[in-house]
Length: 326
Image (cartoon, rainbow, N blue to C red; front, side, top):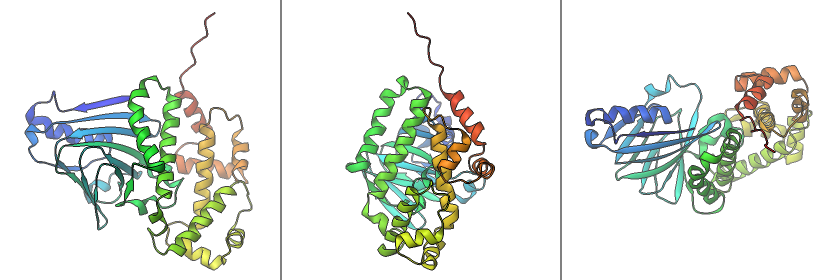
């Protein structure tokens, strides 16, 4: 569905509150500081793409603050990917200050206070992604916040081109296509992040990150193997198990937890696939779970629904095909 918020038909005295409400509904609660609240003009169009939302926001100069008091009521963590199309934006989070011009994009994390502003009228594309969806494809996505990425070349250019195409095609998309497009946007985003050479040094040394990248690649290629363990991974990657443990010690997850999350993400993507006819048990075994009951419990804890409930929900969301006429 598409939703539009605008101040054009709102009384001057109510415009600031109207924009506060629109921003909270589209993203999450923020504190706003207007240059002139009563004469402020803004419009926000929102397109829902399955679990991902895309918005285009045009407005006069504004400052947004995510404060500590905003975080207490939030349950799931979100990332905003902001692509400025008209003027520079300024962003500050976790002690890092950046300026992003048209031709770039940046990530904002909902679970940390931040400040975002533009001193001129702005035209912004914003993708809202659940942290679990992004984390299932790339390790520790929060390390990419406060970095400006290239929106004009490679996967980053494809990502931004796709954002611009969606509004014109949205009306002709089925619910299934919209959900698939949302997942493809995440895939392109991840490719653009991984393709930036700074990702190898964003956490610490190049050597450490190179080892982690090698480990991640090996694990993803071998998720189907229920015998995947620390010793085998360390041996395949040419490091000791002790060093492997040390590499993951600072990632906020153990290796076992990360492997489980990768398997759950793979199972979730398979359950979404309308062409897949495997049973829940077959999907669990396909992605390395040795026990269906254990898989079902882990899936429900992670996604809030059992695998069967999740698949049924996806099926119900798909439109019923129209009957063919002779």
